[in-house]
Length: 180
Image (tube, rainbow, N blue to C red):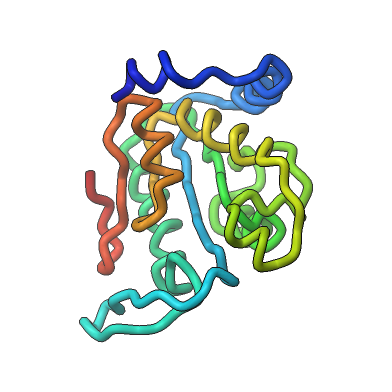
């Protein structure tokens, strides 16, 4: 899949330049977090850590989202030397401040996208926002340059980045364990 992805998909030069600016900030081992929120995307059902089913308006429950940060710290403990984090999210305005508090602003790398760049198609449509998807491409390509990618379950975005990278995704169990 890795070679096929590279053969079939190439970024326009102006987008590749944006990706290059982001990845130039990567230091040491980079752990990527793909946090798909899509809070306005209708109800889906997720399992809580008590084995119950819970309706939510997100790909992740807030409880599960917290586990992403725990998983990132767990992966960090296994890294020798310098490390940083890259955050790819469909709602950057909502997620950036939380990620900076949880991971440390000095270690967190963000694509230079406006807070209103909601690059999930359905979320943008439901929120009445326009998107040209540049942010989505920049985030996906930068995410694929990470050494580890913690992907949101049920979201194809993170899995596309891992296919491009040629590495298996890391997912978070409902007990907070990082799984490959």
